[in-house]
Amino acid sequence: MPSPVSIKDLATAAGVSHSTVSRAIRGAGRVSAATRARILTLAREMGYYPNEAARSLVMGRTKTIGVVVTTIGDPFVTQVVNGIEDAAHEAGYSVFLSSSRNQADREMAVVRVFRQRRVDAVIVTSSRVGSLYGDALAEFGVPIVLINSQHEGRYLYSIAVDDTQGAELAVEHLLQLGHRRIGHIGSETRSVSCKRRKAGYRQALARRAVTPDPSLSVLPQAANDLSAGRLGLEMLLPANPSAIFAYNDVIAIGALLEARKQGIAIPDQVSLMGFDDIEATEFVTPTLTTVRQPKADMGRAAVEMVLALLKGDEVSNRWLPGELVVRESTTACPW
Image (cartoon, rainbow, N blue to C red; front, side):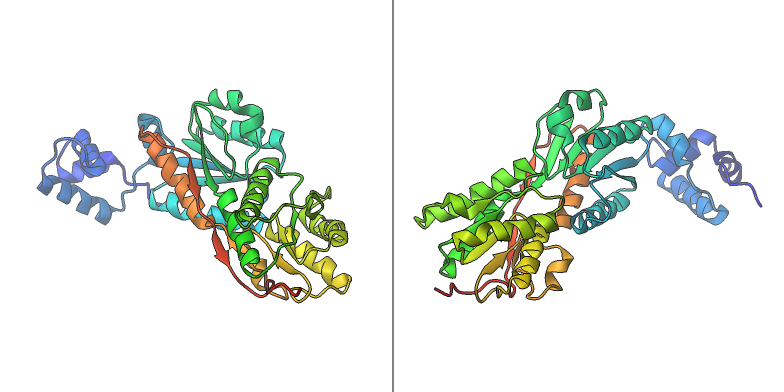
């Protein structure tokens, strides 16, 4: 197998110094346009590829971004990571991906491993680390961008969907359909975003002068979101809701399955609304009305924020708006 072409080989072929070849390839320093063009042409012809590892030692950068996700099986995470990978690839960065399994201490351990690998920055989806380990994160000394988590810190920045605005969109849609007894199923494991979405729920009701009924808002304790949706529907039925807004799509699908089990027609008897717009919303029966999170855009925005931070630019936390997606699970109030 032939040895890789080196800068020394290029310099010999071009009849110039090693430093001239290096400047020409980097596009930096004083090299005439003609000389640079000749060196780049020789590099292509000879099959020269820059040694990124060596370059990273010189530049103090590895051109890598560590990404921590809750689980690779989460459909929300999949689309966020697609956006991250697309934007990173366009910027010439590689991505290391690891799962936290929704455990805060494991998130922190993964971030620590990424720092040992000398990644240039870390992106964490649906993060819990900010509230628990904000001070420790500052010790890593690299930008850390959280997706769908809002915590402050010297090296801590955030990209998030506007939970309150999205929830207002969802409940306003139900109000426009004539619903007034609108149930809410929250998430016991996501206290921060759940509070924001409940605030949007209450604000939409207040604008229509609808007094919230405490019996119409439940916070089921369950092993997973699907079970929370099933339990949440059972908890709401005595309050006689005409519509239900669930914290997310998986909880809504759990409620849909329980309604089917109990012989409750969705949406003829109870309208049902989710949040996230995961792929499954288009395949359940009836298809699920929801609020779409700009998942790929959030991934891209996180990478853009990382690149700005690495350049030393000032950045601010960003909130991206949700979008109402009307499907078959909502209809006019039947009474």
